[in-house]
Image 1 (cartoon, rainbow, N blue to C red):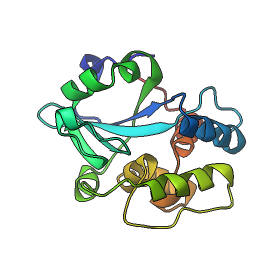
Image 2: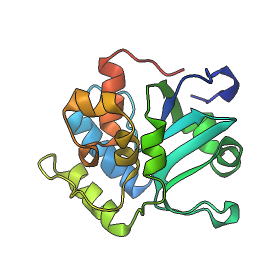
Image 3: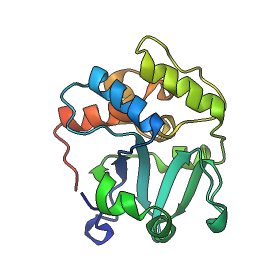
Image 4: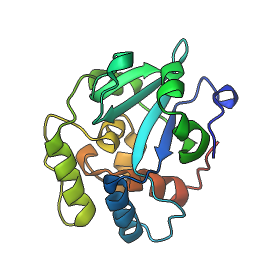
Length: 180
């Protein structure tokens, strides 16, 4: 799939699901199969795409991009930078889904860390559906986007720190929301 930014409705907010090949992605893939066996692909990352005088990316990520002054953790940056830094997601590994997001809530959570402990806790969630992440200061990608997505939290009757990329994908499939 590829993301054609010019075809998106500027009044709509979106979630982008991405799938990868890293060790973490493979663990998330394993959980996705157990949590949602009917999944046709295994999302490993989730971010928001929001228009406000230009398109913006909202995400939480472990890796900073110092060249573009993008920190690790919860962050916001322009689509034009995303195109330069992550072209693979745009042209082959990302899918865009329309969903209502609370932009103010995402803004309020900007600047939080994404530390190694977060990855460790997230992997524990991936490996055991009975283990919950602790509600801590930092946020993983799906947790951050879930803070601004009432529909996901209500559908799964879950706190944001228990939401994974697989939850977003299952929600879209079960509610017949197709990528644009």
